[in-house]
Length: 206
Image (cartoon, rainbow, N blue to C red):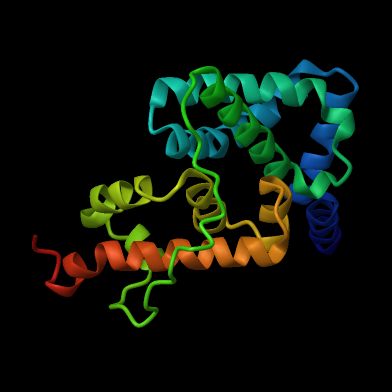
């Protein structure tokens, strides 16, 4: 019995972590294994699709852009230096696909620094945007409020709140400095709070 218990412990100890399993899949995909790449697609495509849907606000466009994202990723796997940042690397590719799609459609992208925009008052009613994301009754209102943010600011906020990326990885995805990431996310939070203040303040009644 003791021997069987030791064998079980050994088997558990030998089981690769999720990070190691992903690294193994990535190594196989880099060697041209289609099954491994398909597994990576299945693991990461839901998050990529959700990010693109929130940017495009169109599910069909998100479907197409998700496919394009992974087509590009497949051809660039050798360029990924930090394997632990596969998720943020894919989101960075997705953002470029989104920007290119908008440019092809001739849609204006508001990427001005907005230095003249005054900061909103921070002392606005709770809950925070994170709390609101968990409240199904406010999902529609929150989606509308997110849609009113300028596009790059909305992307940065989504990367932080929805995908849980640290500031350093958001900076890489967006091509910004870390101070700019923090400033843009701070401004986005304040804009959401101001937009939702009336609704939250009266208990959710319009």
